[in-house]
Image (cartoon, rainbow, N blue to C red; front, top):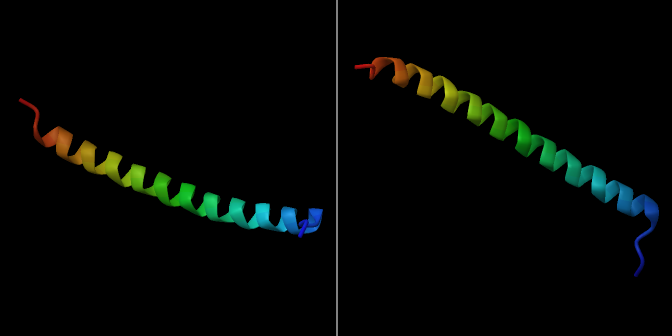
Length: 46
């Protein structure tokens, strides 16, 4: 069965929503890692 353009657009919007959520999650994780690295990095100066 051929998907109608509306179906295809709807599917793309859903996929985009999922990807945006993943991206936001990963960017938040990166920020946490950077903060953690900064905190630990300053402790280990010789």
